[in-house]
Length: 383
Image 1 (cartoon, rainbow, N blue to C red):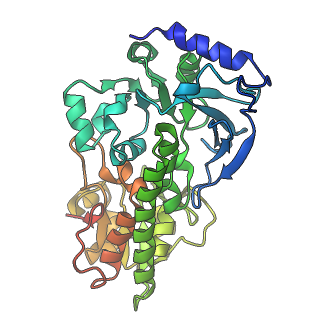
Image 2 (cartoon, rainbow, N blue to C red):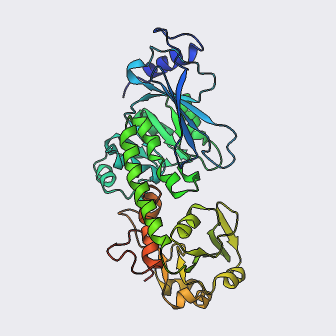
Image 3 (cartoon, one colour):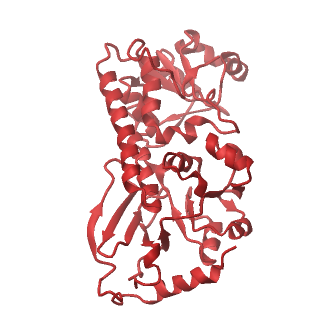
């Protein structure tokens, strides 16, 4: 285990010398360029003359009251440049070495960038589907850390990572605060807050900044973006615009995507009519069975019926499902059949980083003949 006090000393030096000139006569806080992702709304980056990058995360969770600002300091300059840090929430030496991630949506970025060997810990290993990560888990190279909201701080300290990439549902988890107090920097990732499918995917460039892989990350995103836009253009030329229902009952409440949500955007871009597409909610809707029957019983297609994988399974849960035309016509498609080696579903781990594949899946089912040579990745016919 490396000596934590060494890093604390660097932190004290960096934090203690506020607003002082650097030894090289440069103002490390002087921003020479501001970068904003084209689709993602949750983060930006300010590049300075000295090579330091200020990473700004503005929406890590709903109702976040501030923008979190982090200084990404090149390793060779750590302790040599004095930073104006009054408004900073953390200092990270880059490129990052040992890292802990806390959401499966972070995994594909590391895998795509060829950085899986940097991952040393994760809360909930059973939910990781990545084959490369599973091999490293089996070899003991990635350690179990409990649950995101209650990370095993003792284990994290033992692993001594350079960075924890965390997220919060409604605020900063207390376990993260304990880690920061011990000298381990935590950066919040808000990819799950994005409403645009391409916005979620563009968070790979967030990891590019942390690991010094900005150009590679941008190139990977461009490939995904171009594939998505090409598929959307193809769907726009379809001769029909089918109607679509989504969601399912849970304890007498039908949960389905709001009209301005990530999921609804896919349906719209696949040139289909989501029957609740005119609602303003960015998250989910909670409706009664009667309301959904009235608005969606004649839908041509039904996607994402919760965790159901078979028609009989749905009937055993509730006989009312047979009242929907899509159920009777066997045009129900689920992501629950695409499961990884553990307990995780590929749709939730890989889907945010590959919106092009989600869109192609929907086009394949909604518009037969447009993508004859395509094999669906996430959405499969209900059994």
